[in-house]
Image (tube, helix red, strand yellow):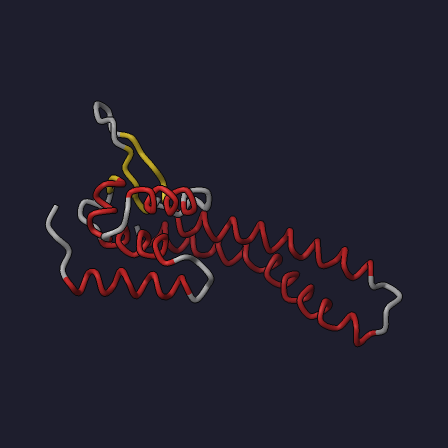
Length: 157
C-alpha cells in the first residue's frame, strides 16, 4: 500500500468534517472518507491507524460505531487472521434503510406525544405536529425513493 497523497488525506478530512456537522466524531468520519478511496478497498485496523495517524483503539471504536449501520463491514480472508474493513457494496442504501426505520419509529413516538397532548392548546401541539407531519412524509416517501434508486442502479450496472 502506497502512502496516501496530501489530496487524498484532504479528501478524507473533508468527508470527516461533513459527517462531523451531522454529529459524528471525526475519526469514524475519516474512516469512511479513507475507505471510499483506499486502494485496496479493504483495510485492516493497523492500515487504517497508520494512514489516519491515530491509535488502533481509536480505529476499533470507529469501526464498532460504523458497522451496525451496514455502511462499513468487516470481512475475513481465508488463511488470514486479520479483519478487513470496507464500505459495503450496498452500504449506503442499507444505511438509508436503517434511517427509514428510525423515521418510522420516530413518527410513531411523535404520534404518542400528540396523544399525550390531546387536550393541550393548539399552539402547544404545533411543534410536535410539524415534526410528526415531516416524519410521516418521510416514512411514506423513503421506501419508494429507495426502490427507484435500486431500480436505476440495477439498470446502470
